[in-house]
Amino acid sequence: MTSTSDPRAAREVPAEAPEGMPRAVRLGLVLVLGGLVASAVYLLAVRGEALLVDLAALGERLWCF
Image (cartoon, rainbow, N blue to C red; front, top):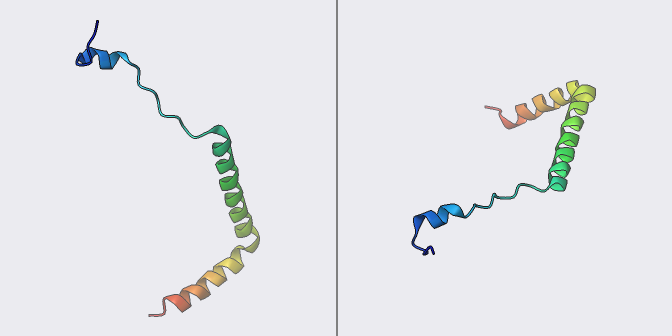
């Protein structure tokens, strides 16, 4: 019979592994992030020059030292 003060008794009980993210949530996050990246790449490909001009104009207004 083992007592609760026996240090070997605590090692015999397997520790439960923490559960990870559910598969549906992980798949949803991957799809949403993939969609955001794909739309960003599309905008850069189609409107890249206009975006750079807009960013340059915004930079002139914000950081006019």
